[in-house]
Amino acid sequence: MIETFRGIWRFAGEEQRNIRRSVIACFFNAVFHMFEIAAIYYTILALLDGKTGSATAWQALGLLAVSILGSAVTKYFSQLQQTHAGYFMAANKRVAIGQRMKSVPMGYFNDNSLGELTGVCTTVLDNVETVAPMVLVTMLGGMLNALVFTVMILIFDWRIGLIVVAATAVYLFITSAMEQKSAALAPHRQKSEAKLVEAVLEYVQGMSVVKSFNLTGRGDHTLQEALEYNCRSNLNIEKMFTPYIMAQGIALQLGSVAMMLSAVWFYLSGTMILANALMVVIMSFLVFAQISSAGSGMSLLRIVSSCMAHADETDAMPQLAETGRAGTPREHGITFDHVSFSYDQRPILRDVSFTIPDRTTTAIVGPSGSGKTTLCNLIARFWDVESGAVLVGGQNVKDYTLEGLMDQISMVFQKVYLFADTVENNIKFGCPNATHEEVVAAAKKACCHDFILTLPQGYDTVIGEGGSSLSGGEKQRISIARAILKDAPIVILDEATANVDPENEDRLQKAIEALTRDKTILMIAHRLKTVRNADQILVLDGGQIVQRGTHSQLMAQEGLYQAFVSGREESGQWKL
Ligand SMILES: Nc1ncnc2c1ncn2[C@@H]1O[C@H](COP(=O)(O)OP(=O)(O)OP(=O)(O)O)[C@@H](O)[C@H]1O
Image (cartoon, rainbow, N blue to C red; front, side, top):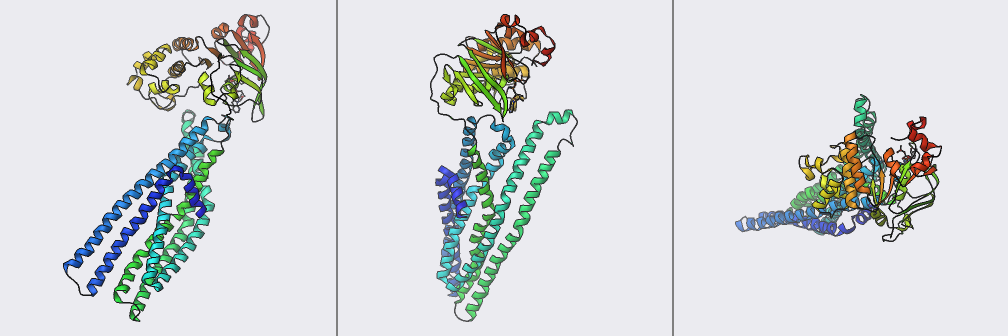
């Protein structure tokens, strides 16, 4: 248990200060509660002494008022610090996970399900946020108060004090047994929650497929299973806890009864005065409240501890080595020097070498699955090469800081992702300090200004998550505006015209021209027009460059390229 406390304390980081304050406030809260007991004791003594005047009543009321006011203020302060600590403990961890994810190779997301990470950032850290400081404060505060209470009772009457100590010992024994059981079940509970999040995400993301294949009812089989598993594990935990909670209650109630009976016995045998005996009867209702409050946190303690351990597992996310130094290269040519790369032992690129001189355009063409996207992603270090080197401006990409490297590159993906934010903020994404005028200028160049003005709130219109409220062509042009605003010297472009209607295609082409002027460009080209105008064409097949040259040079050779352009049988395999 001490180790678990230490774990929470460590996890709290800079929030330790607020937790400490909350525990202190909790202690004073209990001290103020003791004023109530003092008021009762004072009243009993006065009544038994026959002092029934208004002065006694006022003094007792004064003590009660101090108690109520003091408890309210300390309770408020304790809660405030607790909420603050909980919120920032989770928020700081979420931000740290976000930071780490920036340097994680994209391959990590293959092996580790999105549900797992989403689960950590939502339910797991929600548990930490709402429960961790509460448990720590309740338990530490409760234990501290119970200790003070017990010492006071021992001083008041050592015989009654021993009853309290005995009942507390039994209670702690049961609680410790419960804690051990809970330790075994907590990971199951978390696994079931992660499974549930994963199933819900998959269900929502695949909703259009479920509907189009009329699988509603059958398509949610996995979700149903995850729900049942989650329900079962939660019920198991409840069932497991119930007998222990009952035993805890019985131990404390027996303690109370023993206190009362002893008080009566001691009074009748003449070893305790009536006022003290009455006081013990009253205290028998109050004394175990502190212990019970400390123990009630125990069942949650394991859950919190296991949540924190789970959240800390994200510290083990692999990181791309970042030993590079900041700095801007003088030119922006790109070189692949004998690069090979595999996904999970599956070779994708084999000994690929080429150079893209500064401010020239290179088009990559090749059948679907030949490795075009992978090759582009290696430049931005979404993955690191297995052997060989990728150079930007004559310097190995590993020798840049990740941020420094990304400053040199704009990427326009075929699959555009827009955030659930305003159009303006989506365009400003890579350039948060840009002015509204700069955003509008970029949008005009990307041919999206006109359609943005037709949106209900123009540039302030909030786009649905993933850009769901816009057409494919509109999303593409916004992503191009984003890249134009960033104005990086290297542009990597997955030329996406496949799903765009002719009118949109024309606009998209104009937007691409505005983006790529005077830049070093590597594009996965699907349109003959773009390919024809490129300074260099690389033909990729099976992870190797099988042909390279200009359009006229390649047309003069027999091979894949000529077949593609002539629209022969192989062309059916090209991504168009
Ligand atoms: N993250 C990944 N993990 C494992 N394998 C992958 C991953 N991404 C791509 N692949 C595999 O690597 C191969 C090359 O994929 P890549 O996307 O680079 O090809 P491509 O030429 O760009 O294809 P397309 O033109 O269809 O987009 C494919 O067989 C693909 O299945």
